[in-house]
Length: 196
Ligand code: ITT
Image (tube, rainbow, N blue to C red; front, side, top):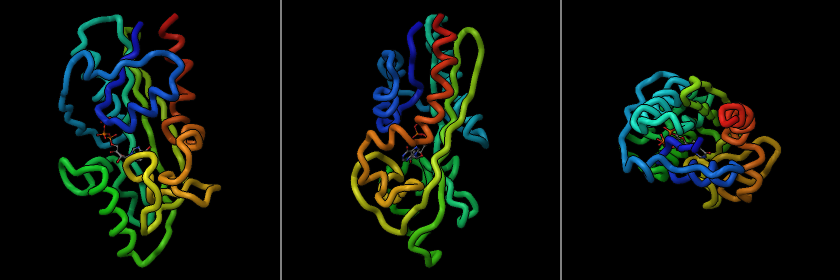
């Protein structure tokens, strides 16, 4: 069975492609661009909405669809942006606009650095049913950005145990510690089982 990724986010696509040993296809290659309304109130709920929508549109039992709903939470801010990470600076906001908004909000709290964590929910939908797994990465967010690597909020995020931001650290390091990588470790045996 072919694996289709239900994401339009280029950063996620790049990371999934690098971390999966088998071939993965972006849904847009088969279905073109699609706007999916993510109106659940959890990462899990939104991941399921995305994977189910793409699975139904593919209209074939030959596919395993994988989605990722993720975001960053800052406890000093009551957990925001959380599930709203992709639209923190408003509907249709770019990654840079969201990043700089969070930098400004952290700065407005009068701190240079405060704990934060990324969450990833990966949903897997196929003819055999639905599964969801999670992964987390803890660290701190800064009231500034450093580096250009990664995507999204990475230039302001310092993973626990490191001094550099994910904007400065090598992609290989992010691949070994990220919320997405940890969720994928749990997703891989499920995907292998479904492909047997
Ligand atoms: P899809 O729904 O098409 O997958 P999206 O960008 O809308 O793409 P989400 O709704 O899951 O995805 O929003 C995730 C946001 O959280 C994303 O836009 C980033 O700003 C942020 N994010 C998630 N994982 C990240 C990571 O590994 N590094 C940096 N930022 C991340």
